Length: 258
Image (cartoon, rainbow, N blue to C red; front, side):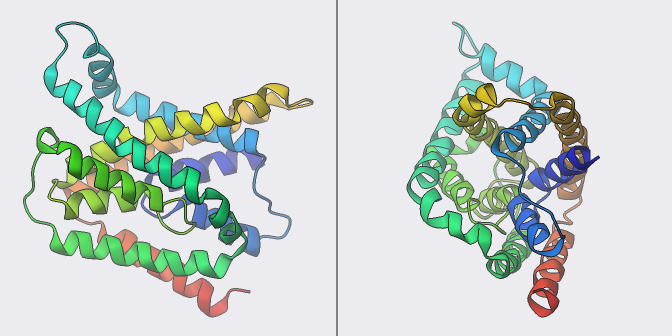
């Protein structure tokens, strides 16, 4: 049951703009006996959310893979290059600042404050949103900027999906296309994390793999629901509800939390 509940939490908070890392940090400080899952189990949950993205955006993923062949669609070839441009700054930020920022995962009040920042970013991006460009006009500069925004999400309490969608919107990309690029951009990020943790997963002994499979399945199913739900919310222009949620959770913890 613990594995399934963690999987549901991972799937929902990975894609909804509410910060999975922030929820994890706050949960550790509020729930007796709650501990961050082992790196191998955490990687398995991320694998489940990766499957959710690949299933929901299977048409895009297939087209991106097909464009590598001779005669492939040039539009998707450009999109693939823009995903690379967005991945590079994310990787650099992660490598350079992961160590110094790891201590923040032991600072729940800081994570709560960053939830307030996430809420403000969501509110401002929706308030300032104007009819924007489609994804076909993204370009390298905007892709790089979105990648930098994704790098900020290493800080607990700052939502990866919320930050990248807000950044894309503020850079002039229309809402649904901003979300589409955000979700596609998470694929190389999760793959990179899985590759880094693969050696530990291979050598882990005495693992109850049924728990791992159950957690990953729960993360995949809840992740699929979260993606569908968020895309509908963005179409209706209601990201502000997530801003209110982040403000309520962050402020509530700062007021009554330990």
